[in-house]
Amino acid sequence: MLTEILRELSASNVVLVAVSKTHPPGRILDLYHAGQRIFGENRVQEMLEKHTALPADIEWHLIGHLQTNKVKYIAPFVRMIQSVDSLKLLEEIDKQALKNGRIIDCLLQFHIAGEETKFGMDLQEATALLASPEFRSLNNVRICGVMGMATFTEDLAQVRSEFRTLRAIFENLKQAFFSGKPYFREISMGMSGDWRLAVEEGSTMVRIGSLIFGDRQSY
View 1: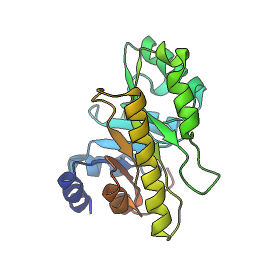
View 2: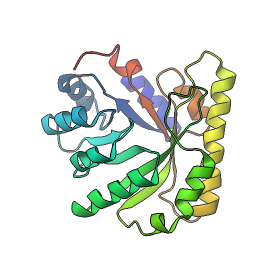
View 3: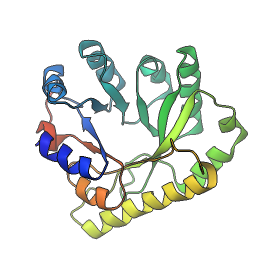
View 4: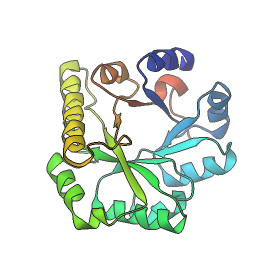
């Protein structure tokens, strides 16, 4: 399944983040040996344990809700934090990145789904963040794009509409704040059940777990 997905994504220049949460290091190593290098985790402690146990050239993406007091644990090695939903969090990432002599790539997370349980900003909040003097003072974070999760539903029209909303947010922010910035290019949307639809709507990065790994395991 991994090979088939990678072949399809390669044709569209879309990056695969293999969501490895709850799966043991040995299972991740299987995919690593098959050529996959980018893995996504929801929990800091789990990511930390796997980072220690697995090859150093794996690119780790934090894709779950991140508390500010846990940023310090992943700042030395995390490749991208996809779930930035506040200025407070971004300021802490910048602080910890500076301590580690790094610039950490981040995505702004948007709430595009119908479910209230999902995290994320709206366009107005993101605009205020990016226009703030506090944001302009940050030198050790780089905003590379946007991330969002569609509603878990069989209504494909609704899912497509939500993906289009995120794409429109991306275009709005790129024009307003990142014109001429080639690093602002990522639209992270699409998961195991809707990734092909996301690619149709402009996704540059999909987060796929169960379709590759199978059912969740206890880790």
